[in-house]
Image 1 (tube, rainbow, N blue to C red):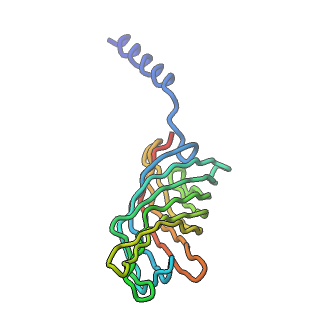
Image 2: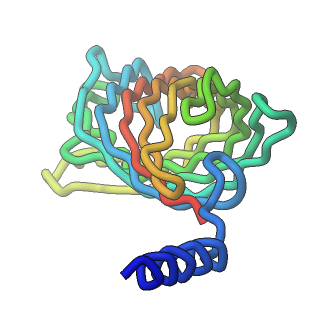
Image 3: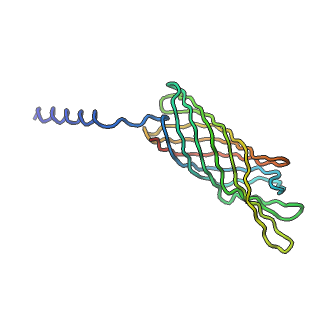
Length: 199
């Protein structure tokens, strides 16, 4: 009986030693999803005058790479694609009814963070943002005339990410995006929660 227990213990120890090492949090590539709330404050964009903002649900996908520059310092790059639901904003063009409907947002950012403990990262990010919008006006014959265009700008944000397992992390983040062009204003505020899988 004792020999059987010793043999079983030795076999288990050998199997564990031979098992591949688990992924280290915040080191290497990852993919994930995010969702939350958008609030767009639009004063004037693509010729459409708007006197109010609009809040809407948004979600999308992310992919990135983290690198531990030091035991507690993490840097990385991330790309994201988000879209909102029912986020069109109504306004007018010289008294004619019109609307601005954001179609999707692309972000390409760098981030840097500090590990307050081995599993919790506090970080800031900054980078480029692009939002595709569809502008629709109502013509004299009541026909809708639509055109799509890209608004380019910059984004800043910060948040906290927590490693739930060696491969899965969760995060909460605030992000501000400025997309104003000449004689225009388009500001976007986002509060997003996300899940990521680290390879």
